[in-house]
Length: 504
Image (tube, rainbow, N blue to C red; front, side, top):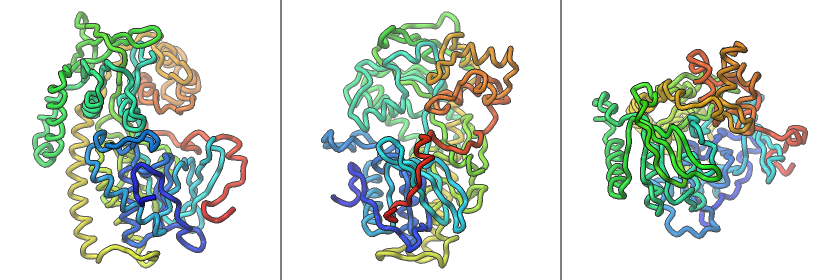
Protein backbone atom coordinates (compact mmCIF):
# COMPACT_ATOMS: atom_id res chain seq x y z
CA UNK A 1 0.00 0.00 0.00
CA UNK A 2 1.33 3.44 -0.87
CA UNK A 3 1.99 5.44 2.29
CA UNK A 4 -0.48 8.23 2.80
CA UNK A 5 -3.00 7.21 0.17
CA UNK A 6 -6.11 9.30 0.99
CA UNK A 7 -8.46 6.52 -0.07
CA UNK A 8 -7.09 3.77 2.19
CA UNK A 9 -6.69 3.29 5.95
CA UNK A 10 -3.16 3.67 7.24
CA UNK A 11 -1.49 0.71 8.91
CA UNK A 12 -0.82 0.90 12.65
CA UNK A 13 2.71 1.54 13.88
CA UNK A 14 4.42 -0.22 16.77
CA UNK A 15 4.39 1.23 20.27
CA UNK A 16 6.30 4.52 20.33
CA UNK A 17 8.10 3.91 23.64
CA UNK A 18 8.95 0.91 25.84
CA UNK A 19 6.19 1.69 28.36
CA UNK A 20 3.60 2.34 25.65
CA UNK A 21 3.15 6.00 26.61
CA UNK A 22 3.01 8.46 23.73
CA UNK A 23 4.43 11.94 23.96
CA UNK A 24 1.19 13.30 22.49
CA UNK A 25 -2.28 11.89 21.90
CA UNK A 26 -4.35 13.62 19.24
CA UNK A 27 -8.10 13.03 19.26
CA UNK A 28 -9.38 13.53 15.73
CA UNK A 29 -7.76 13.01 12.32
CA UNK A 30 -9.35 15.92 10.48
CA UNK A 31 -7.28 18.83 9.09
CA UNK A 32 -6.34 20.18 12.54
CA UNK A 33 -5.50 16.75 13.96
CA UNK A 34 -3.46 15.68 10.95
CA UNK A 35 -1.54 18.97 10.86
CA UNK A 36 -0.80 18.68 14.57
CA UNK A 37 0.30 15.05 14.30
CA UNK A 38 2.73 15.51 11.42
CA UNK A 39 4.18 18.69 12.93
CA UNK A 40 4.70 17.04 16.30
CA UNK A 41 6.27 14.01 14.63
CA UNK A 42 8.55 16.33 12.65
CA UNK A 43 9.73 17.70 16.00
CA UNK A 44 10.55 14.22 17.30
CA UNK A 45 7.47 13.60 19.45
CA UNK A 46 5.88 10.15 19.48
CA UNK A 47 2.24 10.67 18.50
CA UNK A 48 -0.88 8.53 18.78
CA UNK A 49 -3.86 9.67 16.73
CA UNK A 50 -7.29 8.29 17.61
CA UNK A 51 -10.15 8.85 15.18
CA UNK A 52 -13.63 7.42 14.79
CA UNK A 53 -13.38 7.29 10.99
CA UNK A 54 -11.71 4.61 8.91
CA UNK A 55 -9.50 7.07 7.03
CA UNK A 56 -7.91 10.39 7.95
CA UNK A 57 -9.23 13.67 6.60
CA UNK A 58 -12.24 14.43 8.78
CA UNK A 59 -15.51 15.72 7.42
CA UNK A 60 -13.92 18.29 5.14
CA UNK A 61 -11.58 15.87 3.39
CA UNK A 62 -13.99 12.95 3.42
CA UNK A 63 -13.15 10.78 0.42
CA UNK A 64 -15.08 8.14 -1.56
CA UNK A 65 -15.02 4.58 -0.34
CA UNK A 66 -12.21 2.69 -2.13
CA UNK A 67 -14.65 0.15 -3.56
CA UNK A 68 -16.49 2.84 -5.51
CA UNK A 69 -13.54 3.27 -7.84
CA UNK A 70 -13.63 7.08 -7.89
CA UNK A 71 -11.01 8.31 -10.35
CA UNK A 72 -11.19 12.05 -9.60
CA UNK A 73 -11.88 12.61 -5.88
CA UNK A 74 -10.32 16.06 -6.22
CA UNK A 75 -13.40 17.17 -8.14
CA UNK A 76 -15.40 17.03 -4.89
CA UNK A 77 -12.98 19.10 -2.79
CA UNK A 78 -11.28 22.45 -2.46
CA UNK A 79 -7.50 22.45 -2.05
CA UNK A 80 -7.17 18.71 -2.66
CA UNK A 81 -3.38 18.99 -3.27
CA UNK A 82 -3.04 20.40 0.26
CA UNK A 83 -4.68 17.29 1.67
CA UNK A 84 -2.74 14.83 -0.48
CA UNK A 85 0.55 16.42 0.62
CA UNK A 86 -0.56 16.29 4.26
CA UNK A 87 -1.74 12.67 3.90
CA UNK A 88 1.58 11.65 2.39
CA UNK A 89 3.49 13.20 5.29
CA UNK A 90 1.11 11.51 7.71
CA UNK A 91 1.60 8.17 5.99
CA UNK A 92 5.38 8.42 6.03
CA UNK A 93 5.36 9.07 9.77
CA UNK A 94 3.03 6.13 10.32
CA UNK A 95 5.27 3.77 8.38
CA UNK A 96 8.33 5.07 10.24
CA UNK A 97 6.66 4.49 13.61
CA UNK A 98 6.54 8.12 14.69
CA UNK A 99 2.74 8.26 14.43
CA UNK A 100 0.44 5.48 15.55
CA UNK A 101 -2.92 5.88 13.78
CA UNK A 102 -5.81 4.16 15.55
CA UNK A 103 -8.67 4.33 13.06
CA UNK A 104 -12.26 3.53 14.08
CA UNK A 105 -11.47 4.41 17.70
CA UNK A 106 -14.11 6.56 19.39
CA UNK A 107 -12.75 8.28 22.51
CA UNK A 108 -15.44 8.37 25.17
CA UNK A 109 -13.48 9.54 28.23
CA UNK A 110 -10.10 10.86 29.34
CA UNK A 111 -8.70 10.75 32.86
CA UNK A 112 -5.49 11.82 34.53
CA UNK A 113 -2.79 9.18 34.80
CA UNK A 114 0.54 9.17 36.66
CA UNK A 115 2.47 10.35 33.62
CA UNK A 116 -0.19 12.44 31.88
CA UNK A 117 -3.48 11.19 30.48
CA UNK A 118 -5.28 7.91 29.91
CA UNK A 119 -7.70 7.87 26.96
CA UNK A 120 -10.57 5.40 26.91
CA UNK A 121 -11.91 4.44 23.48
CA UNK A 122 -14.20 1.87 21.93
CA UNK A 123 -13.62 0.11 18.64
CA UNK A 124 -14.70 -3.09 16.92
CA UNK A 125 -17.48 -3.75 14.43
CA UNK A 126 -20.14 -3.15 17.10
CA UNK A 127 -18.22 -0.60 19.14
CA UNK A 128 -17.92 -3.25 21.83
CA UNK A 129 -14.14 -3.45 22.25
CA UNK A 130 -12.71 -1.18 24.91
CA UNK A 131 -9.15 0.08 24.60
CA UNK A 132 -6.85 2.47 26.46
CA UNK A 133 -4.06 4.78 25.35
CA UNK A 134 -1.61 6.60 27.65
CA UNK A 135 -0.01 9.89 26.68
CA UNK A 136 1.91 12.66 28.38
CA UNK A 137 -0.01 15.42 26.58
CA UNK A 138 -3.37 15.67 24.87
CA UNK A 139 -4.56 17.65 21.86
CA UNK A 140 -8.28 17.82 21.17
CA UNK A 141 -9.15 18.21 17.48
CA UNK A 142 -12.68 16.83 17.54
CA UNK A 143 -14.07 19.12 14.83
CA UNK A 144 -17.72 20.02 14.56
CA UNK A 145 -21.18 18.78 13.70
CA UNK A 146 -24.03 20.39 11.82
CA UNK A 147 -26.41 22.82 13.50
CA UNK A 148 -30.12 22.37 12.76
CA UNK A 149 -33.18 24.57 13.20
CA UNK A 150 -36.43 22.58 12.91
CA UNK A 151 -39.38 23.59 10.79
CA UNK A 152 -42.69 21.89 9.93
CA UNK A 153 -41.99 18.86 7.74
CA UNK A 154 -38.25 18.71 8.30
CA UNK A 155 -38.48 15.02 9.22
CA UNK A 156 -39.97 14.15 5.81
CA UNK A 157 -37.91 11.59 3.84
CA UNK A 158 -35.73 13.52 1.43
CA UNK A 159 -34.71 16.21 3.92
CA UNK A 160 -31.01 15.97 4.79
CA UNK A 161 -28.52 18.26 6.46
CA UNK A 162 -26.59 20.53 4.12
CA UNK A 163 -23.31 19.09 5.40
CA UNK A 164 -24.92 15.66 5.23
CA UNK A 165 -25.70 16.12 1.55
CA UNK A 166 -22.08 17.01 0.92
CA UNK A 167 -20.92 13.99 2.95
CA UNK A 168 -23.17 11.67 0.93
CA UNK A 169 -21.61 13.00 -2.24
CA UNK A 170 -18.01 12.91 -1.04
CA UNK A 171 -18.04 9.47 0.54
CA UNK A 172 -20.73 7.63 -1.40
CA UNK A 173 -21.00 9.56 -4.70
CA UNK A 174 -24.75 9.74 -3.98
CA UNK A 175 -27.17 12.62 -4.43
CA UNK A 176 -30.12 13.01 -2.02
CA UNK A 177 -32.38 13.81 -4.96
CA UNK A 178 -32.45 15.27 -8.45
CA UNK A 179 -34.11 18.63 -7.75
CA UNK A 180 -32.68 19.89 -4.46
CA UNK A 181 -33.43 23.10 -2.58
CA UNK A 182 -30.48 24.20 -0.42
CA UNK A 183 -31.54 26.30 2.55
CA UNK A 184 -30.46 27.62 5.93
CA UNK A 185 -27.69 30.07 6.70
CA UNK A 186 -23.93 30.25 6.41
CA UNK A 187 -21.24 30.07 3.71
CA UNK A 188 -21.38 26.28 3.72
CA UNK A 189 -24.63 26.50 1.74
CA UNK A 190 -22.83 27.96 -1.27
CA UNK A 191 -20.19 25.22 -1.24
CA UNK A 192 -22.87 22.54 -0.93
CA UNK A 193 -24.93 23.94 -3.78
CA UNK A 194 -21.86 24.17 -6.02
CA UNK A 195 -20.96 20.55 -5.26
CA UNK A 196 -24.48 19.36 -6.03
CA UNK A 197 -24.80 21.13 -9.38
CA UNK A 198 -21.36 19.95 -10.45
CA UNK A 199 -22.47 16.41 -9.67
CA UNK A 200 -25.47 16.75 -11.96
CA UNK A 201 -28.27 17.77 -9.59
CA UNK A 202 -30.65 20.61 -10.27
CA UNK A 203 -30.63 23.25 -7.54
CA UNK A 204 -33.48 25.65 -8.30
CA UNK A 205 -33.01 27.71 -5.11
CA UNK A 206 -30.43 28.59 -2.52
CA UNK A 207 -32.33 30.12 0.41
CA UNK A 208 -30.21 32.15 2.85
CA UNK A 209 -31.80 33.48 6.04
CA UNK A 210 -29.16 36.20 6.50
CA UNK A 211 -27.85 38.69 3.96
CA UNK A 212 -24.38 38.74 2.42
CA UNK A 213 -24.35 42.54 2.45
CA UNK A 214 -23.73 42.40 6.21
CA UNK A 215 -20.11 41.44 5.56
CA UNK A 216 -19.53 44.97 4.31
CA UNK A 217 -19.78 46.19 7.91
CA UNK A 218 -16.30 44.79 8.57
CA UNK A 219 -14.19 46.17 5.69
CA UNK A 220 -10.89 45.96 7.58
CA UNK A 221 -11.38 42.25 8.31
CA UNK A 222 -12.35 41.57 4.70
CA UNK A 223 -9.31 43.48 3.45
CA UNK A 224 -6.87 41.22 5.32
CA UNK A 225 -8.73 38.06 4.27
CA UNK A 226 -8.96 38.51 0.48
CA UNK A 227 -9.05 34.77 -0.10
CA UNK A 228 -12.42 34.49 1.64
CA UNK A 229 -13.99 37.15 -0.56
CA UNK A 230 -12.49 35.52 -3.65
CA UNK A 231 -13.85 32.12 -2.63
CA UNK A 232 -17.32 33.60 -2.14
CA UNK A 233 -17.16 35.30 -5.53
CA UNK A 234 -16.14 32.04 -7.24
CA UNK A 235 -19.03 30.19 -5.62
CA UNK A 236 -21.51 32.90 -6.64
CA UNK A 237 -20.25 32.76 -10.22
CA UNK A 238 -20.68 28.99 -10.34
CA UNK A 239 -24.21 29.21 -8.91
CA UNK A 240 -25.29 31.87 -11.38
CA UNK A 241 -23.67 29.91 -14.21
CA UNK A 242 -25.79 26.87 -13.32
CA UNK A 243 -28.98 28.87 -13.00
CA UNK A 244 -29.30 28.68 -9.21
CA UNK A 245 -31.56 31.43 -7.89
CA UNK A 246 -30.40 32.93 -4.60
CA UNK A 247 -32.94 34.28 -2.13
CA UNK A 248 -31.49 36.09 0.88
CA UNK A 249 -33.40 37.13 4.02
CA UNK A 250 -35.64 34.11 3.39
CA UNK A 251 -36.18 30.65 4.84
CA UNK A 252 -37.82 27.31 4.15
CA UNK A 253 -40.64 27.56 6.70
CA UNK A 254 -42.36 24.30 5.72
CA UNK A 255 -41.55 21.09 3.85
CA UNK A 256 -44.37 19.33 1.99
CA UNK A 257 -44.82 15.67 1.13
CA UNK A 258 -46.26 12.61 2.78
CA UNK A 259 -43.93 9.79 1.83
CA UNK A 260 -41.25 11.91 0.17
CA UNK A 261 -40.45 15.59 -0.25
CA UNK A 262 -42.64 17.17 -2.90
CA UNK A 263 -41.99 20.85 -2.30
CA UNK A 264 -41.17 23.60 0.17
CA UNK A 265 -42.67 26.87 1.30
CA UNK A 266 -40.20 29.75 1.24
CA UNK A 267 -41.02 32.88 3.22
CA UNK A 268 -39.41 36.28 3.37
CA UNK A 269 -37.90 37.11 6.80
CA UNK A 270 -37.66 40.35 8.69
CA UNK A 271 -34.44 41.38 10.44
CA UNK A 272 -35.22 39.09 13.40
CA UNK A 273 -35.97 36.13 11.09
CA UNK A 274 -39.73 36.29 11.62
CA UNK A 275 -41.69 35.22 8.51
CA UNK A 276 -43.32 38.17 6.78
CA UNK A 277 -47.05 37.40 6.26
CA UNK A 278 -48.14 37.16 2.65
CA UNK A 279 -44.66 36.38 1.26
CA UNK A 280 -45.03 32.58 1.25
CA UNK A 281 -44.24 30.88 -2.05
CA UNK A 282 -44.30 27.15 -2.76
CA UNK A 283 -41.56 25.57 -4.86
CA UNK A 284 -41.46 21.98 -6.15
CA UNK A 285 -38.48 19.77 -5.34
CA UNK A 286 -37.74 16.18 -4.34
CA UNK A 287 -35.05 16.87 -1.72
CA UNK A 288 -34.00 19.59 0.69
CA UNK A 289 -30.53 20.23 2.12
CA UNK A 290 -31.00 22.20 5.34
CA UNK A 291 -28.23 23.60 7.52
CA UNK A 292 -27.59 26.57 9.78
CA UNK A 293 -23.86 26.34 10.18
CA UNK A 294 -21.75 24.10 12.38
CA UNK A 295 -21.28 23.58 16.11
CA UNK A 296 -17.96 22.76 17.79
CA UNK A 297 -17.72 19.28 19.29
CA UNK A 298 -16.78 20.10 22.87
CA UNK A 299 -18.05 17.04 24.75
CA UNK A 300 -14.61 15.64 25.51
CA UNK A 301 -13.12 19.02 26.41
CA UNK A 302 -16.06 19.86 28.66
CA UNK A 303 -15.76 16.50 30.42
CA UNK A 304 -12.13 17.33 31.18
CA UNK A 305 -13.15 20.67 32.68
CA UNK A 306 -11.83 22.86 29.86
CA UNK A 307 -13.52 26.26 29.85
CA UNK A 308 -15.74 27.18 26.91
CA UNK A 309 -17.19 30.48 25.79
CA UNK A 310 -19.95 31.63 23.50
CA UNK A 311 -18.81 32.61 20.03
CA UNK A 312 -20.34 35.19 17.72
CA UNK A 313 -22.44 32.52 15.99
CA UNK A 314 -24.16 31.48 19.22
CA UNK A 315 -22.23 28.23 19.65
CA UNK A 316 -19.69 27.44 22.37
CA UNK A 317 -16.04 26.74 21.65
CA UNK A 318 -13.14 25.66 23.83
CA UNK A 319 -11.19 28.57 25.34
CA UNK A 320 -7.52 28.55 24.29
CA UNK A 321 -4.65 30.99 24.59
CA UNK A 322 -2.31 32.17 21.84
CA UNK A 323 -0.47 28.82 22.01
CA UNK A 324 -3.72 26.82 21.74
CA UNK A 325 -3.48 25.71 25.39
CA UNK A 326 -6.79 25.13 27.12
CA UNK A 327 -7.51 26.07 30.73
CA UNK A 328 -6.54 22.52 31.78
CA UNK A 329 -2.73 22.10 31.94
CA UNK A 330 -1.41 19.53 29.51
CA UNK A 331 -4.39 19.85 27.15
CA UNK A 332 -4.43 21.74 23.85
CA UNK A 333 -7.30 22.27 21.39
CA UNK A 334 -7.16 23.15 17.70
CA UNK A 335 -9.54 23.66 14.82
CA UNK A 336 -13.32 23.74 14.98
CA UNK A 337 -13.41 22.58 18.61
CA UNK A 338 -12.42 26.14 19.52
CA UNK A 339 -14.92 27.77 17.17
CA UNK A 340 -15.99 27.43 13.55
CA UNK A 341 -13.54 29.01 11.13
CA UNK A 342 -12.79 26.83 8.11
CA UNK A 343 -10.14 24.42 6.94
CA UNK A 344 -7.26 26.90 6.53
CA UNK A 345 -7.69 28.03 10.11
CA UNK A 346 -7.84 24.42 11.32
CA UNK A 347 -4.59 23.57 9.53
CA UNK A 348 -2.84 26.61 10.98
CA UNK A 349 -4.07 25.92 14.50
CA UNK A 350 -3.08 22.27 14.36
CA UNK A 351 0.47 23.17 13.36
CA UNK A 352 0.70 25.98 15.91
CA UNK A 353 -0.56 23.75 18.72
CA UNK A 354 2.02 21.07 17.87
CA UNK A 355 4.84 23.61 17.94
CA UNK A 356 3.60 24.70 21.37
CA UNK A 357 3.61 21.07 22.53
CA UNK A 358 7.15 20.62 21.19
CA UNK A 359 8.41 23.67 23.08
CA UNK A 360 6.95 22.31 26.31
CA UNK A 361 8.23 18.79 25.67
CA UNK A 362 11.80 20.06 25.32
CA UNK A 363 14.33 17.38 26.28
CA UNK A 364 11.63 14.70 26.48
CA UNK A 365 11.58 14.49 22.71
CA UNK A 366 12.96 11.25 21.34
CA UNK A 367 13.49 10.88 17.60
CA UNK A 368 12.51 7.45 16.37
CA UNK A 369 13.19 6.15 12.90
CA UNK A 370 14.99 9.27 11.73
CA UNK A 371 13.52 12.60 10.76
CA UNK A 372 12.92 15.54 13.03
CA UNK A 373 12.31 19.22 12.83
CA UNK A 374 14.49 22.17 12.08
CA UNK A 375 16.23 24.58 14.42
CA UNK A 376 14.59 26.64 17.11
CA UNK A 377 14.95 29.87 15.15
CA UNK A 378 13.04 28.49 12.19
CA UNK A 379 10.34 27.12 14.47
CA UNK A 380 10.00 30.50 16.17
CA UNK A 381 9.57 32.36 12.90
CA UNK A 382 7.06 29.79 11.71
CA UNK A 383 5.10 30.10 14.95
CA UNK A 384 4.97 33.89 14.62
CA UNK A 385 3.66 33.61 11.05
CA UNK A 386 1.07 31.04 12.10
CA UNK A 387 -0.07 33.19 15.00
CA UNK A 388 -0.60 36.17 12.71
CA UNK A 389 -2.53 34.06 10.21
CA UNK A 390 -4.63 32.56 12.99
CA UNK A 391 -5.49 35.98 14.41
CA UNK A 392 -6.53 37.21 10.97
CA UNK A 393 -8.68 34.18 10.20
CA UNK A 394 -10.27 34.09 13.66
CA UNK A 395 -11.39 37.69 13.20
CA UNK A 396 -13.05 36.75 9.94
CA UNK A 397 -14.68 33.76 11.64
CA UNK A 398 -16.22 36.07 14.24
CA UNK A 399 -17.59 38.33 11.50
CA UNK A 400 -18.98 35.32 9.66
CA UNK A 401 -20.55 33.97 12.82
CA UNK A 402 -22.23 37.27 13.64
CA UNK A 403 -23.66 37.60 10.12
CA UNK A 404 -25.24 34.14 10.08
CA UNK A 405 -26.18 33.73 13.74
CA UNK A 406 -29.82 32.62 14.03
CA UNK A 407 -32.13 35.40 15.14
CA UNK A 408 -34.88 34.70 17.70
CA UNK A 409 -37.72 35.07 15.19
CA UNK A 410 -36.98 31.62 13.73
CA UNK A 411 -39.14 30.17 16.51
CA UNK A 412 -42.18 31.51 14.67
CA UNK A 413 -41.52 28.99 11.89
CA UNK A 414 -42.66 26.27 14.27
CA UNK A 415 -46.09 24.85 14.93
CA UNK A 416 -46.92 23.14 18.21
CA UNK A 417 -46.55 19.67 16.71
CA UNK A 418 -43.25 20.33 14.94
CA UNK A 419 -40.76 17.72 16.12
CA UNK A 420 -37.65 19.28 17.62
CA UNK A 421 -36.00 16.15 19.06
CA UNK A 422 -36.34 13.53 16.34
CA UNK A 423 -34.76 10.71 18.34
CA UNK A 424 -37.37 10.92 21.11
CA UNK A 425 -40.15 12.52 19.00
CA UNK A 426 -40.48 15.56 21.27
CA UNK A 427 -42.47 18.43 19.77
CA UNK A 428 -41.97 22.16 20.15
CA UNK A 429 -45.28 22.32 22.01
CA UNK A 430 -44.09 19.89 24.69
CA UNK A 431 -40.86 21.83 25.17
CA UNK A 432 -42.67 25.15 25.47
CA UNK A 433 -45.20 23.63 27.87
CA UNK A 434 -42.39 22.34 30.09
CA UNK A 435 -41.14 25.93 30.32
CA UNK A 436 -44.43 27.81 30.69
CA UNK A 437 -46.35 25.36 32.87
CA UNK A 438 -43.80 23.06 34.53
CA UNK A 439 -41.17 25.67 35.36
CA UNK A 440 -38.25 24.38 33.32
CA UNK A 441 -35.63 27.12 33.19
CA UNK A 442 -32.80 25.36 31.40
CA UNK A 443 -32.21 22.72 28.75
CA UNK A 444 -31.25 20.06 31.30
CA UNK A 445 -34.59 20.39 33.10
CA UNK A 446 -36.42 20.27 29.76
CA UNK A 447 -34.56 17.03 29.02
CA UNK A 448 -35.66 15.50 32.32
CA UNK A 449 -39.30 16.50 31.74
CA UNK A 450 -39.60 15.70 28.02
CA UNK A 451 -36.65 13.40 27.09
CA UNK A 452 -35.51 15.96 24.49
CA UNK A 453 -31.84 15.17 23.86
CA UNK A 454 -31.88 11.70 25.43
CA UNK A 455 -31.74 9.82 22.12
CA UNK A 456 -28.86 8.23 20.28
CA UNK A 457 -27.40 11.54 19.06
CA UNK A 458 -27.37 12.85 22.66
CA UNK A 459 -28.70 16.25 21.66
CA UNK A 460 -26.32 16.96 18.80
CA UNK A 461 -29.23 17.49 16.43
CA UNK A 462 -31.71 19.23 18.72
CA UNK A 463 -29.52 20.73 21.44
CA UNK A 464 -29.18 24.22 19.99
CA UNK A 465 -32.89 24.45 19.14
CA UNK A 466 -33.93 23.27 22.61
CA UNK A 467 -31.72 25.86 24.29
CA UNK A 468 -33.13 28.58 22.07
CA UNK A 469 -36.71 27.54 22.81
CA UNK A 470 -36.08 27.54 26.56
CA UNK A 471 -34.97 31.16 26.38
CA UNK A 472 -31.99 33.52 26.68
CA UNK A 473 -30.77 32.10 30.01
CA UNK A 474 -30.45 28.58 28.59
CA UNK A 475 -29.18 29.79 25.24
CA UNK A 476 -26.21 31.46 26.92
CA UNK A 477 -25.26 28.42 28.95
CA UNK A 478 -22.23 26.43 27.94
CA UNK A 479 -22.13 22.68 27.37
CA UNK A 480 -22.60 20.58 30.48
CA UNK A 481 -20.03 18.13 31.78
CA UNK A 482 -20.79 14.44 31.40
CA UNK A 483 -18.68 11.40 32.18
CA UNK A 484 -19.18 9.92 28.71
CA UNK A 485 -18.39 11.96 25.60
CA UNK A 486 -20.33 9.55 23.35
CA UNK A 487 -22.72 6.59 23.74
CA UNK A 488 -20.94 3.43 24.97
CA UNK A 489 -22.31 -0.10 25.23
CA UNK A 490 -22.56 -1.44 28.75
CA UNK A 491 -20.80 -4.60 27.55
CA UNK A 492 -17.80 -2.49 26.52
CA UNK A 493 -17.71 -0.77 29.89
CA UNK A 494 -17.84 -4.12 31.65
CA UNK A 495 -15.10 -5.69 29.53
CA UNK A 496 -11.39 -5.63 30.30
CA UNK A 497 -9.61 -2.85 28.39
CA UNK A 498 -6.48 -3.50 26.40
CA UNK A 499 -3.79 -1.20 25.09
CA UNK A 500 -3.14 -1.20 21.35
CA UNK A 501 0.17 -2.76 20.43
CA UNK A 502 0.82 -4.42 23.80
CA UNK A 503 -0.49 -7.81 22.75
CA UNK A 504 -3.07 -7.88 25.52
